Image (cartoon, rainbow over all chains, first blue to last red; front, side, top):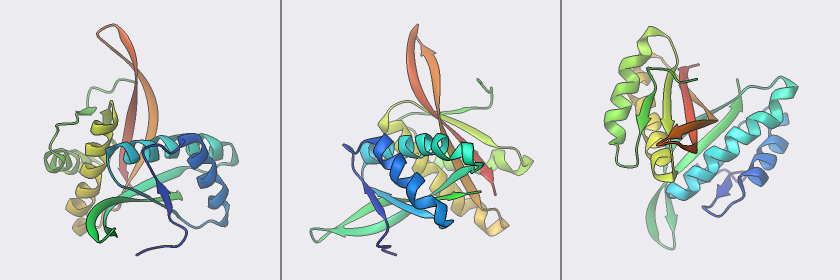
Length: 89
Length: 89
């Protein structure tokens, strides 16, 4: 599944900005998809989700995330990405 | 909150073993707490949760996780850990 709305998070992504993007995408009551490759990117993604929880909590939204493995091709090479599905519970 | 049942995950932890521990702790229908410090440990934790989802899915359990920041003291130094609350939805 390669959702066009998937946010690709890198190890140098700013977690607060990614959190803002999650909070902005969420009100349509659809899950937000994020993708990270490598430990640094996964770490930034998790920080972003934790921060986003704080952004949306005052609106009564309780964010949860579902991590899953995802095979992606980058420059012809097969890589294992982590896909995060973020949604309100 | 320093739950005695908190699973501490390190960058060298085996995700499959951590996943087994999650799956074993979960049936009591209580959340499972995990703690990771550093990108490598966070990465292993996320892999473990993704694997654990597969372990419990056949029982009709849909695992979700909630990441949060947590201040911990290690050898007298303040560190920011990521705490993961894993529960069935």
